[in-house]
Length: 335
Image (tube, rainbow, N blue to C red):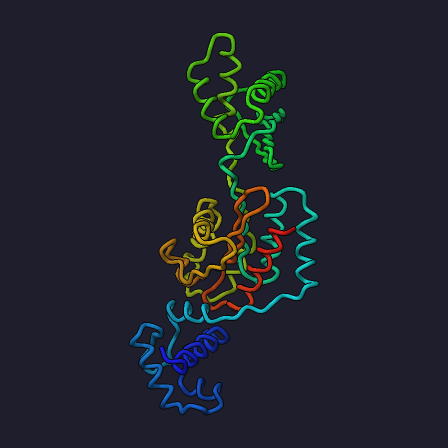
């Protein structure tokens, strides 16, 4: 594509982001200060239409950028540097929080404030994390608080409801059994060995292991990804050309943790620290057709993989969002 044609295309994208309306050749001529006539721009727009960068909703209307146009525009953006003081503030705010869970939740809220989009932060546990110890605490209504601490200083809590009562004394025996036998083992090794022992339980430990099976089936020793999303309600006030029913479908889809993990997975295979932009998410869910996703994968000192991302309308301010995601990602790593 010739430089002049690319300039016109990106000005069309910027105009559409600002107004949300089809862009006419006369509007672009005015933006360019008449350096090109409306007729010349009209010809360029016709060429861009043929090449799949623009579409024309109605014969007499202007043109609308396609996903292909937004991708070209995003690739052209030079990110601004955040002021050193602002970067230090981000790092300090995240650094005050002691656990990855707290940092993930705070970071997603921070992204909402910086971009007015949907903030997503996720930390993915190491498959090779080693067990430090577990704690099991009895709660009312046959519930148990399961705490797993690994040697990379990660702490994961989960409250589960059991199908039958387990006494505090039994929980203490289970805790001691796991901590005495498996401290220092990787979680993968523990799960493999436990599965074998539960299958061939001896008479000595039969009742103990049966109760341990209840906790194991509820996810004991499964370190699920820590995922937090904030700001989905920001999508309600945006014209995504969705009916009320489709908007409800979108919000419901974003409530599903598995859906958010699918979003996060898009970044895990790209190089660490490399900003990624996905325009149009219709293949994930029909109601996401007019959404874009900007994210960055990072690696923490503990070995955890993390993804920092923002979901927003295709008409988002790409420069601002891309800059915010990159700087928050860097702060998350160095806090």
